[in-house]
Image (cartoon, rainbow, N blue to C red; front, side, top):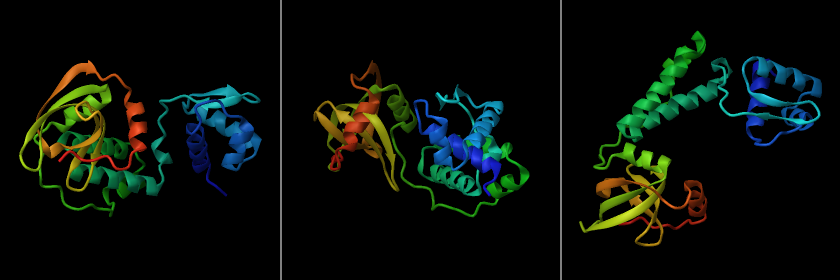
Length: 230
């Protein structure tokens, strides 16, 4: 028999997949419980603070912002969080690495003792930290992506030639030995990838680029052979 806490977590995860109200019948079928049990579980989650709106016969929708109680993390989920935090500490710039460690510490602080011990003694590790350093402020690049701001770069190629680029950054890739900005390049009038370790200097403009980040990301995903600016 499925534990009640696991059943409630499954229901929450199912609700998160829907942006529009979904009927109790559909939720009951997807979570494998009776309609009566489903209604009781929804009432339990609402009592715990979950912003589930709707009613029987109409449908339910989970409003954003509800935080899962920490005891509802499974052991594998906690292992994934630990491994992810350790990878970020190795691969990301210091500010993001510290944020990852702080987030894990906040989670561990409110866990039951047995799960907190599991976090402290987790046996999943990653390799050594990357040695090369970026001249560019990667935290500033992440901010430009969030705010959809134009970046102006002085960018060096493999031969040491420097070009000036105005780009619309919409994503940042963390790879084993390099970080890559995914962007629309005004010079090339196309998508381009830029290595952060080849940025000589950069300026973040106040102007928001004219297309939404989500639109650029969707169009970029349809391209599989976008070149890196060497």
